[in-house]
Image (cartoon, rainbow, N blue to C red):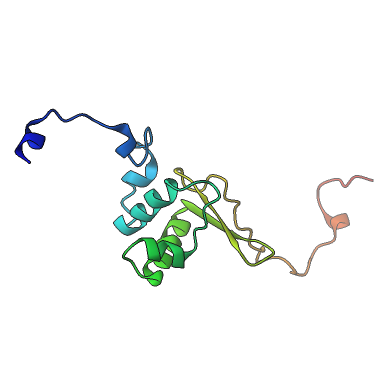
Length: 130
């Protein structure tokens, strides 16, 4: 054992979670918990078509299904994870180092929608096209 410790230590890039992405926002985001960052790293190491069900992840890890769901909600809330439901009920997951990349904005209805118009366009001070 001592011979191993006396040997020269060499860096192996295959041990790194993300090769060139150490400066990416998620690793320095103070609002993302260590649990969510760990789940993010786990998800980034899997192939593109991997099944990211909470039950499957919890079987691979020591965390419960509820803990995995909580971490996924946290990543989704911060914009690092996008989940879309397919027609067959399955979910697709898109993981992004930059928050909100590839995630469409949520459109809300205007509070003025359906309000009654009190002035006719003909009464306007600005000329109307004819």
